Length: 266
Ligand code: DGL
Image (cartoon, rainbow, N blue to C red):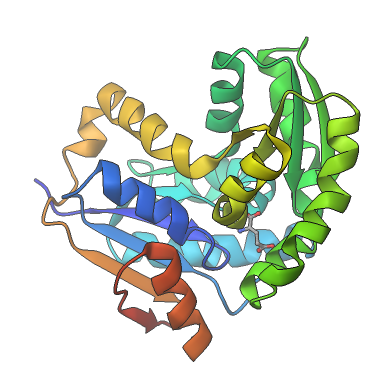
């Protein structure tokens, strides 16, 4: 029976870019987006805090009828995904799925044949070393240089785009000087300026909004039992744990069309 939804989870609104590209590929799947705007940014918090916020959000989404949830947030994927899959999910919802974004993104970079990769992400994502660790398991010969870029999310969330290029220069020029072939954007929000990076530095950019829908399609091919549970009436629900006029404006700008953003208590 088709009575379930596809979930997209992020710490805030950056993941709307992933929801948008998923919607472009899967026009009729019913989708529920949850942004934990009350607790953003996750990237400067402790592992315990990120885990607690993530579990609460995922729990809400399962209770709201999600069969499968894309954990679009890299910080949550780095910190909470494995623990959540092995504990909470196995105990409470063994027939449902939560998929992270780190491994699919690394697989894509490997398939593209890059050998020297730059990765940018939040303080937590980079400190966790998740990209280097996962890469080591799949392709130990690939070189990786990582850079924390904590100013980028606040800049995007607070309309600070006019300082973006200066901030990007200071983060990305040193990576280019070390000879990276491609830059992996390890944070949902960064997809919003992927074209600025491509143009300004003439660099190959690996952006998750271009990867996740494609990887999800492959996943559904391997797991028709999951896809066949999803409602196909093209409904969207956009939920946030805190709401302000600028969140509403941001969600619409990122989604590229009208969004009925609703506040929920987690
Ligand atoms: N969504 C987060 C990520 O992808 C970034 C924002 C945050 O720090 O919460 O890493």
